[in-house]
Length: 220
Length: 235
Image (cartoon, rainbow over all chains, first blue to last red; front, side, top):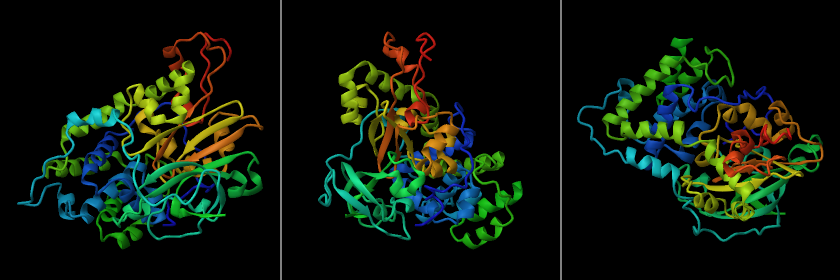
């Protein structure tokens, strides 16, 4: 989706609202919506690429008007309603519909600390389509404009780069964000000269690295 | 504004409210990228109502929510990344392991938790400066740095870092020599990057713990350098 989220290279957002130190959550409700999102993750319906796909479809005006965690709130409500986990009436009233089933929460307090502080990435040695590219190979990104989620940003489409690392096989967000059958495939670190992306205004030695799925690329 | 905003979110939250959203959108004050213009009491009430509904339906356990907030406010944060960096500065073999297999090296120190994503450390040298961004959302190495600061998630940082890294770094107070190669890492997939900053001069006699105190969150994002200690006298 060529949507409001895909902003690499835009220049009209003003200075970075930088600060050196600040609270983790600026408002109590921000922490709660963050925690709700994590606690609902085991249901696999309102998180990750699915949630991103939801907010990427909003109009730009809506997307930019909302603060970061307001977007989290809205996409969560929309996805909960869309997947039938809650109804709009329940959201409006804050009360479950009479006679609705009661689940058992999958995330308990005791699980949180070990889950968030221990263990490493579990997705290694995943099997998928064979790698079509090798480290050191020159590639070009495809010129593609899907209406669903993709992780190939607009600024890097149709550009020449070099494969610098093969990270192995990962589920394809373009598929899983829309609950389509997965097409697991290799993800590579691809190096682009900054000048290939932005022209003469960049320094000749500067680089931009993107992590790109196999089917975003063609040999060059 | 308060009432309009509430009505806007209420309408937008309905699955079928897209058209009405457009209509209400025109009445809104334009304040792009100001992250805190929301009427807090309104969002407080909304999120409270949603939490209470999800608790009542048995989807979430309120104590688990407390534990998540507590973990991010008090347990996870840049102090973890700083210890990893200090170890890499003190132990060349560990540094090699960190660069070759970042997950394994972090786990070796007893840290982890980034289940869905793989960690990758990238090394700054006198010739190379690395900086991390996520242009499409706000991907960040939260298991070692905690949650990202609001500015990292801002549209300004996300949009400009890839096209003008030197300008953004200068704006944030880091002037890079002309000859240095700048490498921007746009976290477009399930990899999470952390910058291994250069060890500041004059820190040869510092313990690992003292070294960790020199490593800021911003140095591990790549928008600052690790600062020499005052005792080092090399600043």
